[in-house]
Image (cartoon, rainbow, N blue to C red):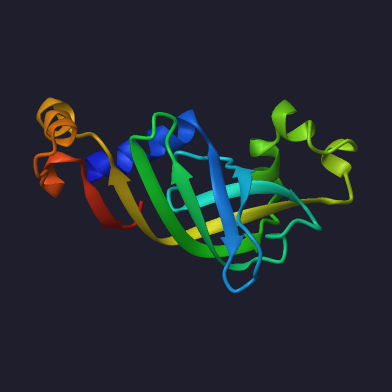
Length: 154
């Protein structure tokens, strides 16, 4: 994946750290989760969850992302696993996370999950002036006039 698009993805995810995530073959719908990000740990995203959460069992999963301005979209696949490193937990714990867990860090329902990304597909949607004009007037628009698309690791 191009470095520029990779950086654009991570910046967009930092600006709006919400993903829809679902375990593969689990049935049911995906649900929104707040990503805990670490710039030094590319290919990994963390989540605080309850033990009873749909994704708490871990395993293969897929996450979808839409940037705030609807100009960047991504689909990520990988593996969810329980994070057992207390240092990682402490690094990501915040008042926002505490709001979801009434008993705080010691809440018996609290679990931290690590999403190990093994593949990603990222799209940008930026038709520019010419692309917008063509879309509005019914002219054919080529894919390179709409945005970028890359497959690979983010």
